Image 1 (spheres, rainbow, N blue to C red):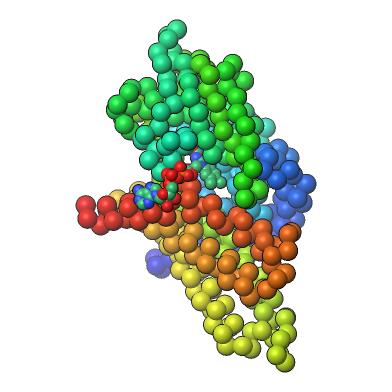
Image 2 (cartoon, rainbow, N blue to C red; image 1 turned 45 degrees about the horizontal axis):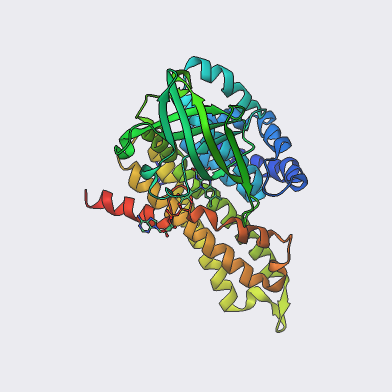
Length: 369
Ligand SMILES: Cc1cc2nc3c(=O)[nH]c(=O)nc-3n(C[C@H](O)[C@H](O)[C@H](O)COP(=O)(O)OP(=O)(O)OC[C@H]3O[C@@H](n4cnc5c(N)ncnc54)[C@H](O)[C@@H]3O)c2cc1C
């Protein structure tokens, strides 16, 4: 087996996905309200069978989908990833009733999902989460706040992580499936740099019962980490898709734009910068594919590889998009330009699902194990 090469069918599938994203999804994304859930876009992802694929495919397939969609339509990419993040815990740990009620709605794009782990006082240190689950009426009452939750408050249901045992850290957290219409649940949309739907969730004595638990009581942190482990390399794939889009735009632009009597590409400083962007993008892509393939094979090295892939790819995409802006000059900063859009989009993945520094901590821990 080569160190890493996609099969011809995989490459063809990615090319088809990029074309579909550009032709069918981009126009729907353009019609959406930035920062709000775009339901026609989610429905289109369902009609194309991509949401179904989130639940039937492995980590590498997920990466290929995210990279291809990100290349042509970051909004579609994000909408797809969030359906997976919010509903994978239901597929993996839900009861028959929960799965029957929600998964067909999610895969058709009729229902929108959210994954609610972060809180105002618990971000990187997720095990410090404090959303209270107090026992009562044969179940629990949830009180507190979640913050920076993608798709909140518009999502139709949320996978919510709450504290069922005080002082037990990661061992006292339970995952619940909370439908949006539960009395006492509200939230507010937050205006972010990227056109990403993000908001808060406020729980004012929201009742949940044993039938709402995902997995087992006090074992919810495993549900969260299992989901994030699957998604970690694919955040890198999202970044690689954006880097590739920025790179291709730069190759085209520097070949066309003339200055000092010739195209920009004839200036060695420019050509070498583009070569560096291409090399770093390819290196990040290979690490992402390798980490995803290792996940699919169930290899023990996954935590280290996945952290390396997320770290390298998100940092590389930031570098590549920034360099692409530089080589495009002023036009890249005009609102509506592809690079103005990517410049805003590329920043958040270095922070969410484990900030760059947290990935380094994971890698170091594995090295010194
Ligand atoms: C666009 C977007 C979408 C999001 N969507 C979701 C979602 O759907 N669900 C959800 O639950 N959360 C979501 N989040 C929240 C995200 O997971 C948190 O922002 C992230 O975990 C970091 O937490 P924090 O922002 O509170 O930063 P903090 O934890 O306060 O950290 C701030 C900074 O401190 C540094 N730092 C932190 N810990 C360490 C460490 N151990 N070692 C060294 N340096 C460190 C890093 O530089 C870090 O960026 C989203 C965030 C964004 C920006």
